[in-house]
Length: 224
Image (cartoon, rainbow, N blue to C red; front, side, top):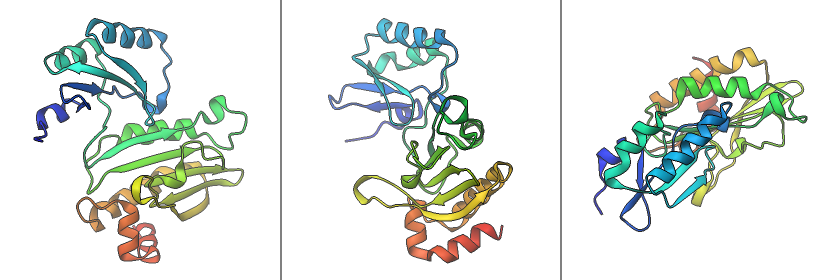
């Protein structure tokens, strides 16, 4: 089957019926502060005869069952950014409620997660990359199975790298521990820079670690 590149660029993913598409507007952290945005999504979905609305694992709301000739009009009416659902890029930054909303949180994960999303969501990379930001060790954002995971503790942050789920699941490796929040973004920048330099095309961080060795990757990242 031929993939329509122009439709992928529009954030449209072909569905099982091979006729309709799903789109997923980007909702950073899955947090909606303006209730009118939910009304707009519902209204647009109804206007263009969507078959379903799906809450995704990437903390977005997918509008499912859109006819091909209606995709541009749907995006225009929504007026929202597209979620990076496909491609070799930063696909998603999954963020737990953290200290803004959760009594178990140890760190302010929402603030740092939203900043990471703003800086990196959709960035082109050698392979697909997912981020999880969890403000306590319950790891509600599944940080241990993300390419880059942040886990809050009473003593600071753990950063883990190389996790993934799917058919070849991999638990992430510890990169650093007890890191102050102010140092998270600089380390994130180092991880991304090293990954861009060292990874092969289509190679996720865990695959890169398995090829090069954990200590080599850790030293390469932290030396930057």
